[in-house]
Amino acid sequence: MTNDRWYRHAGADRWSVPRAAFDEALERSVGKAFAGRTPAPAERDRYLQSLHLEDLALACACALGQPEAWDHFVAEYRPVLYRAADAIDASGRAREAADALYGELYGLKERAGIRQPLFHYFHGRSSLATWLRSLVAQRYVDVIRGGRRTDSLPDELPVPGEEAPPDPDRPRFAAAMRGALATAIAALAPRDRLRLGCYYAEQMTLAAIGRITGEHEATVSRQLARTRRAIRDEVERRLRDDHRFSDAEIAGCFASMAGDAGAIDLSEWLPAGERKNSGVNRSLNRK
Amino acid sequence: VTDDRNRDRQLEQALTRELRRAEMVEPGGECLDAETLAAWMDGGLGRDAVTLMEAHAAGCPRCRAMIATFASAASPDVPAAESRPRLWRWWLAPIAAATAATVLWVIVPSTDRPSSPSPERAAEVASLRDQPPAVAPEPSRALEKVPAAPPGGKVGAQDAAANTQKASRGSREEAAASIASSPNEALEAARQRADAPGDQRARLERSAADAQRDAAAAPPPTADAAAFRRAFATAGVIVAAPDSPVRWRATSGGIERSPDAGGTWERVADAGGGVVLAGFAPSRDVCWMVGRAGLVLLTTDGRTFTRLPFPESLDLVLATATGPRVASVTAADGRVFETVDAGLTWRRR
Image (cartoon, rainbow over all chains, first blue to last red; front, side):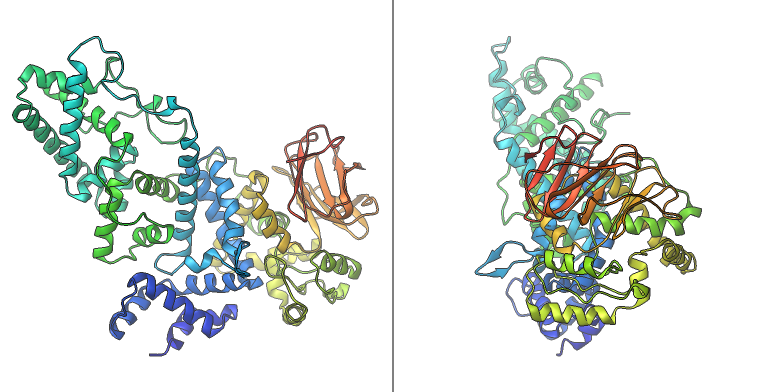
């Protein structure tokens, strides 16, 4: 099966991409998607047909350093990069990550005298714009996490039960509660755990989670409520059966996780501006 | 009922703490790379692959954070620059498109845009790129393309010759879409945009708005970005003041100012005997221009440009500033220098 059809379909001649270079890009994409397995011709065709071939051709041309392709890329995608960066972090830190991408995209760093353009890692399985957003997100997260590794301890969340407790039972309750909770979470289906993490740990909106999981936000809300109920039942069961706690002690276990300062203000834990709507009541239990 | 709700709230607080605190479940498989995440989000992964990704991300705080960050970047309800003032109206689109193209040209110089009419200028720029000088177009053919180096500037003589040939094939339309180098040409380009089909015009308008927004908010570049821009640096400079129709441009005859977005130009200064390669205007009265051999020019009244001392005879290819006192300039070798006292002293960053 010749790749001419895909070359034409991609409009790769617009950027004067050599056929061999485009073929290589297709093979890299196939290799990534099928993880080294050789797909059947029909399967391969179906896969190639699903690709964003025009974007792949542009990436290919940019990787080769075609000036006209770069011109087009800068004009069309620089705003995409910057909008994504501003949406991630309006203070400009994400823009730094976006700016730093240009050099990598072209491949200013060489290995064995050969440029290593980041464009080689674009396989056409998404649009170029989505890939760029994803790159900015990745770099930003790595920068933030790298920064946190060198931050002092106060950024860490307080561990319930480890602070000096007024109630001598609290550390015991907290440890039991944490253990039961971890077991209950580990027993969840991956998608349930993902929804839970995105909602509670990452403070994502229901709509945003729905875009990830391909569900309507009402479905996400319903599923989260179901998962939370299942976790609660499992935690209570474990506390009762494994630890032989009474109802009062189980209540103490739940209370121990709430800390001793009353309601927890999540905004204290989150860097300013890092998450949206952090002040909003995110309880699924609200009526 | 109250106890029941209290317990639910306590559980939610516990979930938030514990899920944020650490990995609660050992994530299997490899961490998401940007390409895989993008493919996932665009529906480019098979069902099995999605299941694997979900299983990993569910237990991996780093990947979950990446997903959340991506979601905020891709969120349709968070337009990045919505909080910034819109500088134009739809009926200004054709003119703004032309002028914004010039702004884009200054911030990220284009390889396709035409050269300055001056042959000396083309030679200057070619030598800056360590290339054989390009064949400068005749003044009357100012819209033709100038040969351009691929990013990185590592171009052999053969490539440069090929570029030169390619440049001679450049169409006027493409060049006009890239930039207009005179007021009449700018207006002509604007007219062409106004005649464009609806969707094409919308795209041009969007690009223009983005370019203007970017010009107003672009941060000082990183070394990589500077290298990238340096690679694309070509002749000619037009600087746009933010929130204002004031423009400055450097020509072979000196520095000119336009009070009406390029409609008319008035010569206000000479270039101090140097070649201007870039500029930046943080306001309608303040404009920094930089160029070859450590050229730094500053105006604080929009008209009178003063040449400022610069410690090294470097080719300066980029300037950014926040006002008349604080500015940073990037040299052709990627080094960045800052001043906080209106150019009296410079410190390497």
